[in-house]
Image (spheres, rainbow, N blue to C red):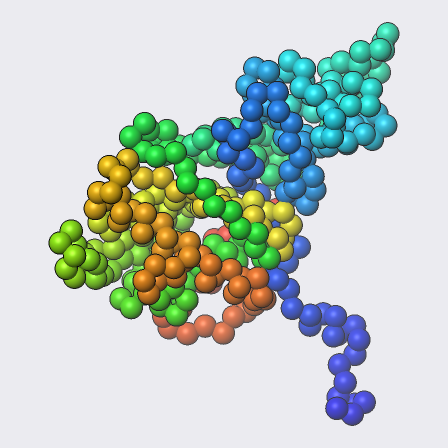
Length: 344
């Protein structure tokens, strides 16, 4: 390359590839913990939405999520802090803060600083518990929640198992991860499906519905090859709540849970539940094999472990070169834009 054809240094920087959607985390409700993993009076430090947070459950059982650094002299409340009633106290001077970021007590002060009465002095996130999951509302402009988290009765039913949980760290954005749900052609080349899985996508406000199905070959109760209908039903509400039902010989419900750490780092969790079947029964064996397919491999089918190296090493193409059979990727991206503060 001679000097006349070299790319100027500034232009070269502009051409560097971006991993995931650039610069932003979409607003919405996101998983931050399983309810059964946060005890009464427990404090945890978690990383998401560009920073560390203090997640705590007070003595009454309510959950709070606040900025970790005390506004007094900057101590980290997550290291040595203690729950006291409905407050969490800083380990340095025992200032007490509630889940709305208000300082409610300075134990040694004869008179509280007037600013403490005017409003919150710590950033906080709205938190709710639903489906045995703790969800936090993130919005870069600190806008209050615009919608609620949907409830799925199976997650609370005594006739369905407790969650079987797995977790992965992915080096891309949540938008890129979820794009797989309408990338129908990759199901054959990445996941090994020999049947053509046809899909339909419907977008309705903040909801997105995806239905995929095909007739597939299975081994029946007598150990003989048989065919049955295989369907995948995905319900997405906002960017962070995804519930997927897989139906074949049995039904498997998966909570597809993503927590954005940054725009290029996501913690992905699968929480599986299904009806309780007798140990060793055909149904029990079938549903456990179903879970294996979604994770690693079972027979000729590959699960999320086949996606991860692709996600970790791909870039985000703003204007991808598409062809017939790729699925509605650009309509999906247009729908997703509504969850960015600037609509980008």
